[in-house]
Image (tube, rainbow, N blue to C red; front, side):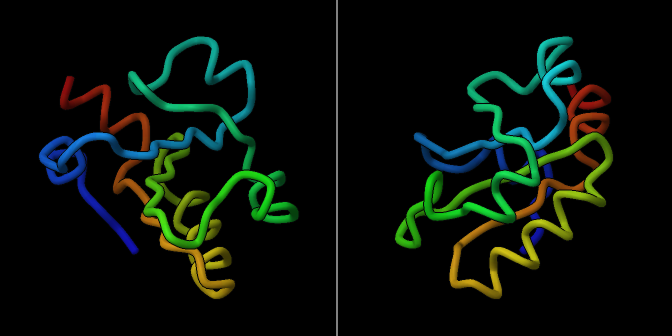
Length: 94
């Protein structure tokens, strides 16, 4: 349920990348190609956004919240992965 930034960028495209931070954080900067869906929306209404046959890669600022969200979604049958270190780790690797 976890993936590193390096492994993420080595995946065959397209990938489904979701930024679960608040709108202000997303608007200040995000990983290119990421769509914005706040964590509470994914937790309470996953079927609105996710297909159980696809893989999704989620991130927050540091990876802690996305790890929790992924755990919850995984228990519901979704194929989700948390990006280790979140957006801050992406900035360090950029």
